[in-house]
Each structure stands twice: as structure tokens, then as C-alpha cells.
Length: 123
Image (tube, rainbow, N blue to C red):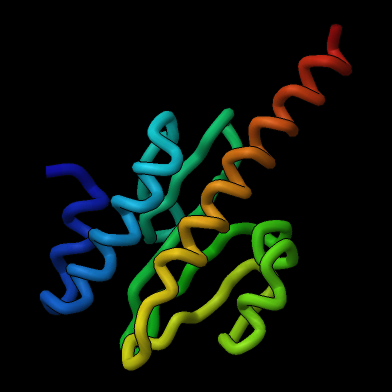
């Protein structure tokens, strides 16, 4: 059992279900991502750069896609409580899995383009 699975198992079953679904959508859309526990929560990196993180709390799922991931989807995220690079999806509402998936896909492309630009500037 890896550290992310251990993290998930500490929550009630209904929250575990949500966390596993979020984990699966990240892994399906970023299969090359490195999975780790960072800042005490599941996190993913592509091209050695942060991709997304998520965490469970008493009343919500926190989703962290860096400020750029949130600013790109600001209209879609407007109805949720937010911080600079975070959003809170309440547990008593349907999880916006499709929105999370779009954010992950955006971040994958963003991380790839940052790496490509960096390689071009080195050459």
C-alpha cells in the first residue's frame, strides 16, 4: 500500500470514494505524473513541476491546481470558496469531476509547454 492509499484510508467511506475518484481522474489524464504525498496531501508532478494536489477536510475537498489552473477556470470556479491556488468543493454538493478533469488536462499542457520553452531557451 502506498502513501496516497494510506492517506485515503483515514477518511470515512463516502469521502474515500470521492478521493479515489479524484485520484483516478488525475492518473487517467496525467499517466506520466509522479504521485507523492506533499504538504500532507496527495500531490502530482509532471516534468518535475507541480501539477495538482487534493485533500479531504471535514466539509469539503480541497483542490489545488496552482494559481494559473484556477485563474484559467475562474468562471467555472466562481461559485466555490477559493484561495490563491485552491478551491473548496463542498461534500454536501455533487463533486465537479468533469471540471477537475479539465483543470488537470490544462495543467498537463501547461507543464509540458513550460518544459518545452525552457529547453528551447537552453539550446
